[in-house]
Length: 277
Ligand SMILES: NC(=O)c1ccc[n+]([C@@H]2O[C@H](COP(=O)([O-])OP(=O)(O)OC[C@H]3O[C@@H](n4cnc5c(N)ncnc54)[C@H](OP(=O)(O)O)[C@@H]3O)[C@@H](O)[C@H]2O)c1
Image (tube, rainbow, N blue to C red; front, side, top):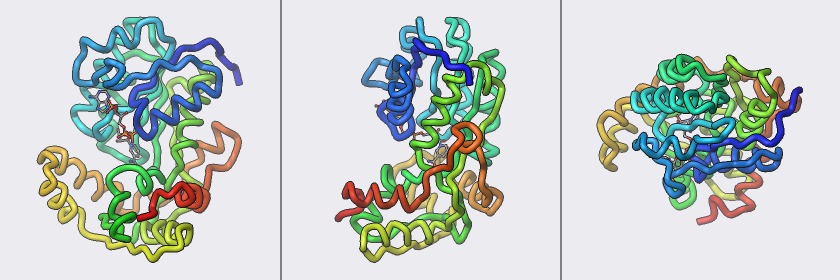
């Protein structure tokens, strides 16, 4: 594997779930990290903030804060990728979602920019259970309410996603022009994932599936805009219909090791007090 050192990488979403881990993994690999979030003056919604962030960098990790399948993501990723290329920042790695057909236009917008692109398509994050909107229900109510039915999903640890992103960035042109699908090592239903967390915490936790449309109505009642709710319901209905109930070997292929297991994730997050009421 050809290593490129002395690289400066712009990491969007650097305060978020994937970006923070990409930033850590990049630093550990010896790259200079330029964090790009609103606190650092970078705003996906304000094009005038992009050039200052990108100027002089060698590469960028792109994660759009809305769903990668949204029209906003397609537009912003395409425009930002064009601007990056025009500033000489050719090496771009985009986070996308494994099996999400709605995300294809965003991936296409990246490709059309002429960048040296790689798309890392991630399975559902294990950290959806420990960081973000699903945590409170488990922690305080002892229940996960989610439209995951009985479908099986190979949840992936974000440290593995971040390691794949950084390996792709530091491998010269090895992964340029490629999509890399990454998953965890084991298929679990959402109920089985909650059972793993129950085992790790010693608490009684339950999973209550509900139809995607009902879940969408709850999101709308919490103030999510109609277009966001519509996309999420569509994404849940398509992603969680069984089409993605298979493993992917991106972690093994790129990193030469097995991905982390859900039980390891659950034990660590439980020990950190994530689900302690
Ligand atoms: N959840 C899953 O299982 C899954 C699976 C595959 C792919 N994905 C994709 O992952 C993405 C979400 O990634 P994530 O979980 O890492 O995100 P996240 O934890 O929600 O973090 C979002 C980041 O974006 C930043 N941000 C928000 N609005 C911004 C703006 N207007 N301008 C600049 N930065 C902004 C936030 O920082 P500040 O607030 O500090 O600015 C934060 O660092 C989505 O595109 C989703 O489709 C998710």
